[in-house]
Amino acid sequence: MTSQETAPPRKAGGGGTISSRLTGIDAARGAALLGMMSTHLVPTFGPSPLWEPTIVGLVFSGRSAALFAVLAGIGLALSTGKQEPRKGSELWAARGGVAMRALVIAVVGLTLGGLDVNIAVILVHYAVLFLCILPFLGLRLRALCFWALGWILVSPVLAYLVRPLLLDATPPLQLGHNPNSEDLGTPGRLLADLFFTGYYPVFQWISYLLIGLVIGRLALTTAKVQLRLLTTGIVVATAAKLVGFLAMEAWGGRAALEALPGTRGYPLESMLQVNLTGLEQTGSWWWLATASPHAGTTLDLLHSGGTAAAVVGFFLLLGTVAERIKFNVLLVLSGPGAMTLSLYSAHVWVVSGFTNQPLPAGWTDEGMYWTQALCAVAIGVCFALLRRRGPLEWAAHTASRLGSYRPAAVG
Image (cartoon, rainbow, N blue to C red; front, side, top):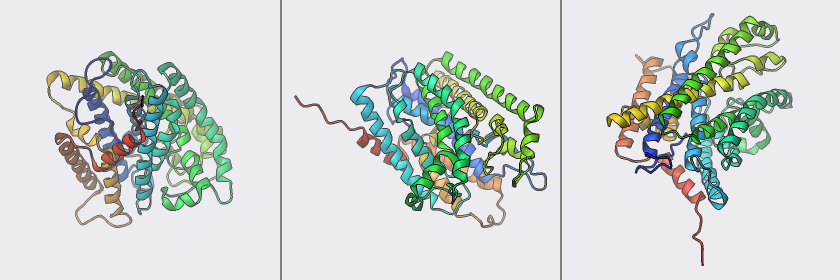
């Protein structure tokens, strides 16, 4: 959730400047931030007893968080070699920088996890994803494509087989809350939750970073690649969602899942459209046939990953247009997108002050969202105009530089 952009523009290997390319990347990250904030503040389900999905739930649930993870992979690709990955000591130095950046993010995430807040904080999972992706940073594009496809196809099946074993343990290896510093005392339970039983299962989510690495290795400054990202992403996302819909509604999947014992807070039909978090997803192989948000299935990974690719392609195209007309139309998104770690953390801290309390008189959920969203945009734009990093971005960047430091050769 941090930007790789620095204040002065840098030259790209394939022509053009990295700054223009990263404007589109940061704009996509800003859009993901605002989308994720909306799912935290605005209801994703309507009132009982129908619990019908809301527009926010249908549009942003699952997709915004996945977009963050894909953008993380893109950022790592851009910072560790672009089209040609680094090799030898340079690669190990880059890995050291990524590991130190992950450490800062983990510390922030564990701190936020100690707050009383009704938000599934993603930062600890995000940091673990950074560490898990380190072995892949030296791979070329073709190898990354095979790994990404294989992980998307296989990881949901393995997770489906492992998850019941962890949930059947005594006590169940699941936190039921955001990871915090106290959970470091029970590392087995913490790791099980982070990788398999928690809100953002890292084991499947590695797929998103691999997709991001693939995208980041492409020639992102070219309009042809940008257009292909947009069109291919739309096709993959649409096809995956269509297959998931047919599996549930035409081939008997939903009926089979509704026949399973267990309790649900919302009607299964609504949960399949908005969010499967909270369901154990055990007892039937039909769970693997859904394309529902936060399902962690192959179809979900393809749909949300395809959506992320399309969003990235769209904003890269807008960035190209902005460069040609000499007017940065993306600033309202790229500004906050360049400091999402700071803004996301501030957002979680602010929301914690209203947890389990009524909103102030005259305020609505939508009003709370737009207030925070506009503040995030204003702060991000100010920092961008001043060409400054956010405070937590500065800490992460400093840690990354320390981690990637290589003493000068002697002799």
